[in-house]
Length: 262
Image 1 (cartoon, rainbow, N blue to C red):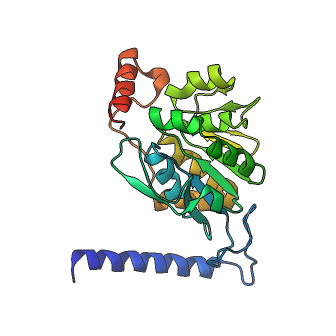
Image 2: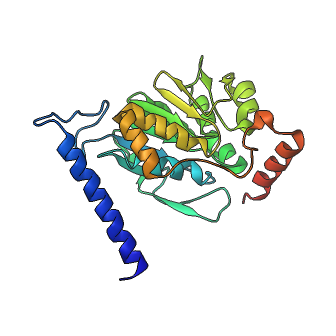
């Protein structure tokens, strides 16, 4: 037996044992609770929330993929990448492309809209794209949750959704959020205001998505998802907080982001 085969068998056995133990512990005849805010069963027979993750040319890779890893683990959830047009959509570095399964015109009801952020060029273009802004504005009217990651909060602001609210964005987008759109910047990992949840830069989308998972499916499920993806950040450097970073480190970070774009 190969090492990989043995590992798969161990994992299968662990999952099966956990499921059996949970079944044995459940009260006889206990009803299964339906998570709040779920939509009718989709074409795949799923009855959980329908989640659309909006990407555009020049988005930042982890903005959609980090949340997708979390949200796709919500029981019966349907998660899809959406963009102005179907097909491959490239990141701000140009190295990777994700496939948008549906164009904005093809998207039906969404329980959750998640708007990704992007690099300087990608954001500049998206902020002037009336199709994207109109889609965000109209879709928000019917969502249970409207969310953003990183500079995606600027798109929510441009669509007029953040008036009178505080919001989190990437620290490099904070000045634009306040001066261009008149929205109060909050330097937190994520900010919950009404049915809108905004998050700080890139990696903060994972934190926000775990919080969102708890709102949709309950804290126990969200905790289980966190363990399932083994999300226990222990970075080698204590340099991820802009409020505590030196001016030189912030200059270098901004320089790297700009230089890596295409």
